[in-house]
Image 1 (tube, rainbow, N blue to C red):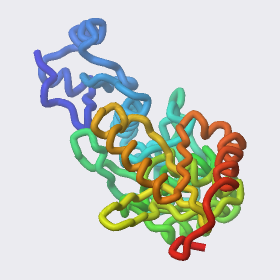
Image 2: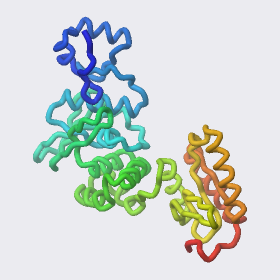
Image 3: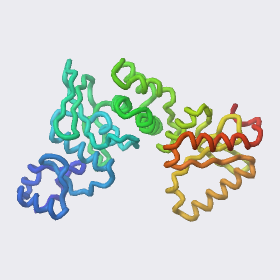
Image 4: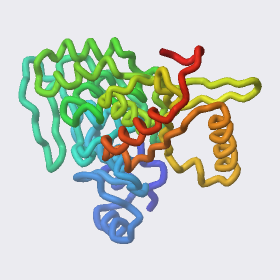
Length: 309
Protein backbone atom coordinates (compact mmCIF):
# COMPACT_ATOMS: atom_id res chain seq x y z
CA UNK A 1 0.00 0.00 0.00
CA UNK A 2 1.88 3.02 -1.27
CA UNK A 3 0.95 6.63 -1.94
CA UNK A 4 3.92 7.32 -4.20
CA UNK A 5 2.87 8.85 -7.51
CA UNK A 6 -0.62 9.82 -6.33
CA UNK A 7 0.11 13.45 -5.55
CA UNK A 8 -0.61 16.18 -8.06
CA UNK A 9 1.03 19.43 -6.97
CA UNK A 10 1.71 17.76 -3.64
CA UNK A 11 -1.92 16.79 -2.95
CA UNK A 12 -3.90 13.55 -3.07
CA UNK A 13 -7.47 12.74 -2.02
CA UNK A 14 -8.98 10.02 0.12
CA UNK A 15 -10.45 8.55 -3.06
CA UNK A 16 -6.98 8.51 -4.66
CA UNK A 17 -5.64 6.57 -1.68
CA UNK A 18 -8.52 4.11 -1.74
CA UNK A 19 -7.79 3.48 -5.41
CA UNK A 20 -4.38 2.02 -4.54
CA UNK A 21 -5.65 0.03 -1.57
CA UNK A 22 -5.07 2.53 1.25
CA UNK A 23 -8.40 2.60 3.08
CA UNK A 24 -9.51 5.17 5.65
CA UNK A 25 -8.10 3.13 8.56
CA UNK A 26 -4.69 2.75 6.91
CA UNK A 27 -4.67 6.42 5.96
CA UNK A 28 -5.41 7.41 9.56
CA UNK A 29 -2.51 5.25 10.72
CA UNK A 30 -0.17 7.03 8.32
CA UNK A 31 -1.39 10.39 9.63
CA UNK A 32 -0.70 9.31 13.23
CA UNK A 33 2.75 8.11 12.19
CA UNK A 34 3.54 11.49 10.64
CA UNK A 35 3.85 10.03 7.13
CA UNK A 36 0.79 11.92 5.85
CA UNK A 37 -0.58 15.35 6.71
CA UNK A 38 -4.20 16.42 6.35
CA UNK A 39 -4.72 19.62 4.34
CA UNK A 40 -8.52 19.85 4.33
CA UNK A 41 -11.43 17.46 4.36
CA UNK A 42 -10.49 14.27 2.46
CA UNK A 43 -7.29 15.81 0.98
CA UNK A 44 -3.75 15.12 2.13
CA UNK A 45 -0.03 15.40 1.41
CA UNK A 46 3.07 13.35 2.17
CA UNK A 47 5.21 16.49 2.03
CA UNK A 48 6.41 18.49 5.03
CA UNK A 49 4.25 21.60 5.44
CA UNK A 50 7.43 23.71 5.72
CA UNK A 51 7.06 27.48 5.84
CA UNK A 52 3.68 29.21 6.23
CA UNK A 53 3.92 30.08 2.52
CA UNK A 54 4.54 26.45 1.53
CA UNK A 55 1.68 25.28 3.74
CA UNK A 56 -0.63 27.88 2.17
CA UNK A 57 0.25 26.68 -1.35
CA UNK A 58 -0.51 23.06 -0.50
CA UNK A 59 -3.76 23.94 1.26
CA UNK A 60 -4.82 26.18 -1.62
CA UNK A 61 -4.29 23.38 -4.14
CA UNK A 62 -6.21 20.99 -1.87
CA UNK A 63 -9.18 23.37 -1.60
CA UNK A 64 -9.16 23.82 -5.38
CA UNK A 65 -9.63 20.08 -5.76
CA UNK A 66 -12.27 20.01 -3.04
CA UNK A 67 -14.25 22.82 -4.71
CA UNK A 68 -14.52 21.99 -8.44
CA UNK A 69 -15.06 24.95 -10.74
CA UNK A 70 -13.06 27.34 -8.57
CA UNK A 71 -9.84 29.20 -9.31
CA UNK A 72 -7.13 30.67 -7.11
CA UNK A 73 -7.63 34.32 -6.14
CA UNK A 74 -6.03 37.03 -4.01
CA UNK A 75 -3.13 36.04 -1.80
CA UNK A 76 -3.50 32.35 -2.75
CA UNK A 77 -2.95 33.13 -6.45
CA UNK A 78 0.02 35.34 -5.55
CA UNK A 79 1.65 32.66 -3.39
CA UNK A 80 1.08 29.83 -5.85
CA UNK A 81 2.73 32.01 -8.52
CA UNK A 82 5.79 31.87 -6.20
CA UNK A 83 5.86 35.61 -5.57
CA UNK A 84 7.11 37.00 -2.25
CA UNK A 85 4.51 38.40 0.09
CA UNK A 86 4.36 40.73 3.06
CA UNK A 87 0.98 40.04 4.61
CA UNK A 88 -0.55 38.72 7.80
CA UNK A 89 -3.37 37.00 5.88
CA UNK A 90 -1.52 33.79 5.01
CA UNK A 91 -3.98 31.65 6.96
CA UNK A 92 -6.90 32.53 4.66
CA UNK A 93 -7.31 30.56 1.44
CA UNK A 94 -8.84 32.66 -1.33
CA UNK A 95 -10.63 31.15 -4.31
CA UNK A 96 -12.95 32.53 -6.99
CA UNK A 97 -15.92 31.11 -8.87
CA UNK A 98 -17.77 32.57 -11.82
CA UNK A 99 -21.10 33.90 -10.62
CA UNK A 100 -22.68 36.14 -13.29
CA UNK A 101 -24.19 39.08 -11.48
CA UNK A 102 -23.14 37.66 -8.10
CA UNK A 103 -21.84 40.08 -5.49
CA UNK A 104 -21.57 37.98 -2.35
CA UNK A 105 -18.51 36.01 -1.32
CA UNK A 106 -19.02 32.56 0.11
CA UNK A 107 -17.28 31.07 3.15
CA UNK A 108 -16.89 27.33 2.64
CA UNK A 109 -14.97 26.47 5.79
CA UNK A 110 -12.73 27.98 8.46
CA UNK A 111 -10.35 30.38 6.72
CA UNK A 112 -11.59 29.60 3.19
CA UNK A 113 -13.50 32.09 1.08
CA UNK A 114 -14.78 31.94 -2.51
CA UNK A 115 -15.16 35.33 -4.19
CA UNK A 116 -17.50 36.02 -7.12
CA UNK A 117 -15.56 36.61 -10.32
CA UNK A 118 -16.98 37.53 -13.71
CA UNK A 119 -13.82 37.79 -15.87
CA UNK A 120 -12.24 34.74 -17.57
CA UNK A 121 -9.72 32.78 -15.52
CA UNK A 122 -6.43 31.35 -16.71
CA UNK A 123 -3.91 28.87 -15.34
CA UNK A 124 -0.77 29.31 -13.27
CA UNK A 125 2.08 26.93 -12.55
CA UNK A 126 2.12 26.11 -8.89
CA UNK A 127 5.86 25.51 -8.49
CA UNK A 128 5.36 22.26 -6.59
CA UNK A 129 5.62 19.84 -9.51
CA UNK A 130 4.76 22.45 -12.14
CA UNK A 131 1.25 21.35 -13.08
CA UNK A 132 -0.84 24.42 -14.02
CA UNK A 133 -3.90 25.15 -11.88
CA UNK A 134 -6.82 27.55 -12.53
CA UNK A 135 -6.31 31.11 -11.34
CA UNK A 136 -7.72 34.59 -11.81
CA UNK A 137 -5.31 36.87 -13.75
CA UNK A 138 -2.28 37.64 -11.61
CA UNK A 139 -2.76 41.41 -11.91
CA UNK A 140 -6.26 41.04 -10.45
CA UNK A 141 -4.97 38.86 -7.62
CA UNK A 142 -2.25 41.39 -6.77
CA UNK A 143 -4.62 44.35 -6.67
CA UNK A 144 -7.25 42.54 -4.63
CA UNK A 145 -4.60 41.36 -2.18
CA UNK A 146 -3.41 44.95 -1.85
CA UNK A 147 -6.97 46.15 -1.22
CA UNK A 148 -7.31 43.70 1.67
CA UNK A 149 -3.76 43.65 3.09
CA UNK A 150 -2.44 47.16 2.49
CA UNK A 151 0.07 49.08 0.38
CA UNK A 152 3.25 47.37 1.59
CA UNK A 153 1.76 43.96 0.87
CA UNK A 154 0.79 45.10 -2.63
CA UNK A 155 4.15 46.69 -3.44
CA UNK A 156 6.29 43.76 -2.25
CA UNK A 157 4.48 41.32 -4.53
CA UNK A 158 3.81 43.72 -7.41
CA UNK A 159 7.47 44.81 -7.65
CA UNK A 160 8.53 41.18 -7.91
CA UNK A 161 5.85 40.39 -10.50
CA UNK A 162 6.92 43.34 -12.68
CA UNK A 163 10.60 42.45 -12.29
CA UNK A 164 9.91 38.88 -13.46
CA UNK A 165 7.79 40.03 -16.39
CA UNK A 166 4.62 38.38 -15.06
CA UNK A 167 2.59 41.62 -15.14
CA UNK A 168 3.08 45.20 -16.28
CA UNK A 169 2.14 48.43 -14.48
CA UNK A 170 -0.51 48.91 -17.17
CA UNK A 171 -2.06 45.53 -16.27
CA UNK A 172 -2.37 46.70 -12.66
CA UNK A 173 -3.81 50.08 -13.67
CA UNK A 174 -6.50 48.40 -15.77
CA UNK A 175 -7.58 46.23 -12.85
CA UNK A 176 -7.74 49.21 -10.48
CA UNK A 177 -9.83 51.15 -13.01
CA UNK A 178 -12.19 48.21 -13.45
CA UNK A 179 -12.69 47.84 -9.69
CA UNK A 180 -13.75 51.47 -9.40
CA UNK A 181 -14.57 52.48 -5.83
CA UNK A 182 -14.42 49.04 -4.19
CA UNK A 183 -12.98 49.14 -0.65
CA UNK A 184 -9.20 49.45 -0.60
CA UNK A 185 -8.76 50.43 -4.25
CA UNK A 186 -7.92 54.03 -3.33
CA UNK A 187 -4.75 53.06 -1.47
CA UNK A 188 -3.67 50.74 -4.29
CA UNK A 189 -4.39 53.44 -6.90
CA UNK A 190 -2.17 55.90 -5.03
CA UNK A 191 0.61 53.30 -4.80
CA UNK A 192 0.57 52.36 -8.51
CA UNK A 193 3.08 55.05 -9.63
CA UNK A 194 5.64 53.64 -7.18
CA UNK A 195 5.60 50.04 -8.48
CA UNK A 196 9.20 49.49 -9.56
CA UNK A 197 10.61 46.28 -11.01
CA UNK A 198 14.15 47.41 -10.22
CA UNK A 199 13.74 46.47 -6.57
CA UNK A 200 15.29 43.04 -6.17
CA UNK A 201 13.86 41.89 -2.84
CA UNK A 202 10.98 42.58 -0.44
CA UNK A 203 13.46 44.41 1.79
CA UNK A 204 14.42 46.77 -1.02
CA UNK A 205 10.76 47.43 -1.79
CA UNK A 206 9.99 48.26 1.83
CA UNK A 207 13.14 50.41 2.16
CA UNK A 208 12.23 52.31 -1.01
CA UNK A 209 8.83 53.08 0.50
CA UNK A 210 10.43 54.36 3.72
CA UNK A 211 12.71 56.66 1.70
CA UNK A 212 9.81 57.86 -0.44
CA UNK A 213 7.60 58.63 2.57
CA UNK A 214 10.55 60.51 4.08
CA UNK A 215 10.82 62.69 1.00
CA UNK A 216 14.22 61.29 -0.03
CA UNK A 217 14.60 60.87 -3.81
CA UNK A 218 16.77 57.94 -4.88
CA UNK A 219 17.96 56.07 -7.95
CA UNK A 220 17.52 52.28 -7.50
CA UNK A 221 20.22 49.90 -8.74
CA UNK A 222 22.70 52.69 -9.49
CA UNK A 223 25.95 51.56 -11.12
CA UNK A 224 29.12 53.19 -9.78
CA UNK A 225 32.20 52.90 -12.00
CA UNK A 226 35.82 53.84 -11.42
CA UNK A 227 38.24 52.28 -13.88
CA UNK A 228 37.92 48.52 -13.59
CA UNK A 229 35.89 48.82 -10.39
CA UNK A 230 32.10 48.52 -10.67
CA UNK A 231 29.49 48.36 -7.93
CA UNK A 232 25.74 48.30 -8.36
CA UNK A 233 24.19 49.74 -5.21
CA UNK A 234 20.61 49.34 -4.06
CA UNK A 235 19.97 53.09 -3.85
CA UNK A 236 21.90 56.28 -4.48
CA UNK A 237 20.32 59.36 -2.95
CA UNK A 238 19.98 61.90 -5.73
CA UNK A 239 22.47 64.77 -5.64
CA UNK A 240 24.54 63.24 -2.84
CA UNK A 241 27.30 60.73 -2.24
CA UNK A 242 25.11 58.64 0.07
CA UNK A 243 24.48 55.00 -0.81
CA UNK A 244 21.69 53.11 0.97
CA UNK A 245 21.85 49.31 0.93
CA UNK A 246 19.34 46.79 2.22
CA UNK A 247 21.34 44.17 4.08
CA UNK A 248 19.68 40.77 3.90
CA UNK A 249 22.48 39.22 6.01
CA UNK A 250 21.94 35.78 4.45
CA UNK A 251 24.57 36.39 1.79
CA UNK A 252 27.20 37.01 4.47
CA UNK A 253 27.23 33.44 5.80
CA UNK A 254 30.00 32.74 3.25
CA UNK A 255 33.36 34.12 4.42
CA UNK A 256 34.54 34.83 0.88
CA UNK A 257 31.36 36.75 0.09
CA UNK A 258 31.78 38.71 3.32
CA UNK A 259 35.40 39.55 2.44
CA UNK A 260 34.40 40.70 -1.07
CA UNK A 261 31.63 42.87 0.38
CA UNK A 262 34.04 44.51 2.84
CA UNK A 263 36.50 45.26 0.03
CA UNK A 264 33.67 46.67 -2.08
CA UNK A 265 32.52 48.95 0.72
CA UNK A 266 36.11 50.07 1.41
CA UNK A 267 36.51 50.99 -2.27
CA UNK A 268 33.24 52.97 -2.21
CA UNK A 269 34.50 54.87 0.84
CA UNK A 270 37.75 55.66 -0.98
CA UNK A 271 35.66 57.14 -3.80
CA UNK A 272 33.91 59.41 -1.31
CA UNK A 273 30.67 57.50 -0.86
CA UNK A 274 28.95 57.12 2.49
CA UNK A 275 27.23 53.74 2.82
CA UNK A 276 24.20 53.30 5.08
CA UNK A 277 23.08 49.71 5.66
CA UNK A 278 19.55 48.88 6.74
CA UNK A 279 18.39 45.47 7.96
CA UNK A 280 14.88 43.98 7.90
CA UNK A 281 14.01 44.59 11.55
CA UNK A 282 14.86 48.30 11.22
CA UNK A 283 12.17 48.76 8.59
CA UNK A 284 9.58 48.54 11.36
CA UNK A 285 11.06 51.79 12.73
CA UNK A 286 11.12 54.06 9.67
CA UNK A 287 11.77 57.31 11.54
CA UNK A 288 14.96 55.90 13.05
CA UNK A 289 16.09 54.74 9.59
CA UNK A 290 15.39 58.16 8.09
CA UNK A 291 17.24 59.93 10.91
CA UNK A 292 20.34 57.79 10.29
CA UNK A 293 20.19 58.44 6.55
CA UNK A 294 19.76 62.19 7.01
CA UNK A 295 22.81 62.22 9.29
CA UNK A 296 24.80 60.52 6.51
CA UNK A 297 23.49 63.07 4.00
CA UNK A 298 24.62 65.92 6.24
CA UNK A 299 28.19 64.66 6.36
CA UNK A 300 28.45 63.46 2.74
CA UNK A 301 30.72 65.05 0.18
CA UNK A 302 29.47 67.56 -2.40
CA UNK A 303 27.74 66.00 -5.42
CA UNK A 304 29.77 65.16 -8.48
CA UNK A 305 28.86 66.07 -12.04
CA UNK A 306 27.97 62.51 -13.07
CA UNK A 307 25.57 61.88 -10.17
CA UNK A 308 21.86 62.21 -10.95
CA UNK A 309 20.22 65.42 -9.76
